[in-house]
Amino acid sequence: GQNIDQPTEMTATEGAIVQINCTYQTSGFNGLFWYQQHAGEAPTFLSYNVLDGLEEKGRFSSFLSRSKGYSYLLLKELQMKDSASYLCAVLYSGAGSYQLTFGKGTKLSVIP
Amino acid sequence: DGGITQSPKYLFRKEGQNVTLSCEQNLNHDAMYWYRQDPGQGLRLIYYSQIVNDFQKGDIAEGYSVSREKKESFPLTVTSAQKNPTAFYLCASNQAGTGNEAFFGQGTRLTVV
Image 1 (cartoon, each protein chain N blue to C red):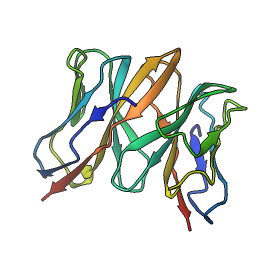
Image 2: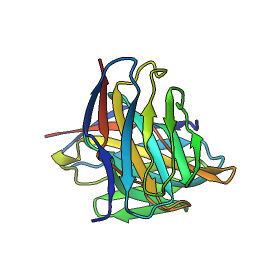
Image 3: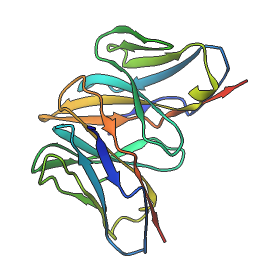
Image 4: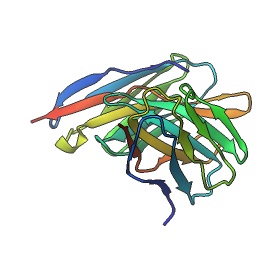
């Protein structure tokens, strides 16, 4: 599989800003997704990046640098409900097929 | 409503038995995926399929089998050869190609006793 690395756990304070980093192998790269997953539930889509730069969507933003194999998810004005795991996923292409590979996820704890 | 459905949500099986997990989607998506998630871990790819009657092994295919006889359906069989089958199994689908988010089913929590 393709190595996708992200921190295991992070803790941040309600109302603050947190940045979750993700690095990945660049060979075959065809786009990067961020998902949110609450415990015991299915992941839900947050953002998609395929070109370099920042994509903003409300309190959430995602950045991509294809040359560096690097992305981050930025969460602003943190709320308690943002406590969840955040999964970085890369779409790889090769031999005529596309494979969606996930990192191990970053468990974010938001504290009062 | 369009969506992707996994059933059942909870499944118990005795060790040594094969078990098949269901995944159905009515989103007209070409690609479907099966992932396994262990406690505190990320999603690991078991099998994926881009078109009907074709599928590829993911990172942890050993002990699993799939079929893709219809576009809407991608069942996963957990065989007795899978040494640690107890896990949370997630099925996903998307329109094949770039930029298309994957939609997930609600997951099946399989416990082998």
